[in-house]
Length: 608
Image (cartoon, rainbow, N blue to C red; front, side, top):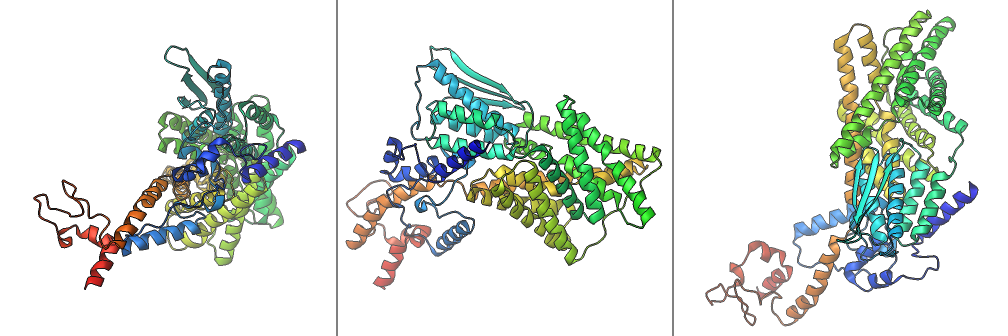
């Protein structure tokens, strides 16, 4: 395991040093990229913003008006604050690009590691490699569109461009042909189950980045992928169970509990996760695992409530059960389902929504069964007790608890130190905005959840791209502490106690909060992707300016405007006409064109 971790760290070192191959020798593609202005930006995307030999060739365009200058300056300043550079600036490779942004930007100008296109086995091996990587990404919670982009980028790196990728729920299929007269080639793979392993996701991200920069041949990439998939977990089972318990205890603090509720929630979560793992090992379906978790959550809370009454210790069992429900909701695929629905995969999104709803129903059924068992044992639970009003100090404690909950959830999903730190910062920002700004000034729970999730997706996406970790980690971990376990328990308790109006209202509120969280984090991630996407289109604008700038300088030196040779229907030797042969004066031209042409304004002022 240590050797494997060392290999992954070496990969990261090589990736951040932006090496194309083992000998640090520039490939022909890199040499070609460094000689053309257009390819500078494309090469920075494909080769992880390599430090090319040519400087930034994109001058500032002359001829913007005051408003356009202000907008351009403001956008450049905001991009610098967000961690990006101005359009057309590579900054010597210091601006990192996320893997998902690179694979969606543009294909490589030419294959970095081309295979033998006449060998059927080689083509099948590339398709199988892309399918296996897509399997891991899809199982980690990535959306269909992002997985397709990764698979297309991998096949294009090895020279196979005409590949059709189809993903439906848990099946992946790649299809291509060797020619019009040759037979079809395909690869098919079925994703077994969702596995929230953030460490494996990080390693796959590094592997894909190395493939895109030409660092691995097909055989080397397949060997590295096999090593990643077959490696043991990053943390042992006991440590992961403790992290799940501490995560649930932090959620109890966040929803208004105190130390007794946090301890009870921690112990309950450890029992729930251990029992679910044992049942999963025996092949029990996920539905019944969630029923078991819902069954376990109320019993310790009811027992602690009655013991606390006997010894004079105040315990709020509603907080304990609500925190346990949040722990069970944490593994659902709601964010992935909504992202699939937004990005054009409605069939997969519908199936994932149904799966999430079925799992939620199993949790509700288990909690109801647990409440019934507690009543049969003579330890009935009291009426639903909501959280009390809070002051500034309590809001600070709740905010810090939310940040810690996000961090512990990330560690429970095998996240490494860097991802855990970024997740903590992101969750702290979201919890602070939610509990210390939005709720105190009067925003509703649904609106506040959506706004906080949007900021979590935005800042998490920017920080993830800055520190080169998959944005999915910060997105999922950031909104998990805000899941509506408390509202879900309130609705279920009201339904069980013959208060259907309150029950259905609370259940609808819980569903709206969950949807708002998922939609907000998807929107924030989209904004972050737009802010930090590779600036490819600006390269052509820069080339256009390079061509026009010498002409403009030469024209000003001769005392004429650079575009005086243009006419409405014909070209003359320097005189613009109105179509009938009469020369046009500058005052009869376009007002916007005259205003944007700064050189013309300066010439007019000097003439006056």
